[in-house]
Image (cartoon, rainbow, N blue to C red; front, side):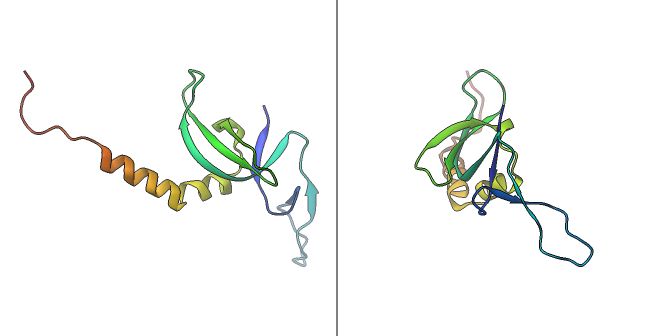
Length: 108
């Protein structure tokens, strides 16, 4: 298993600690099992029979896109950016508009 994060610092992530003077946060290298994504493009149910979601990930500095299981996505910002994106909101709207509702009455 590996981890997928989003970061605009080209391979580095911010260390969450700072000194008492409020100095700038330190840069620390990412662990070797961590890959940087640009953004999530889509979601779907997992295809391998396991419950959960897969995300279509657009990789940073690459044209490559791959479907990744949800447990590999460890960046709350990456998920937040996807679920608040206009693309996701349009997907939800189109799914709701296409839903069929059954007219009242009994089925024979």
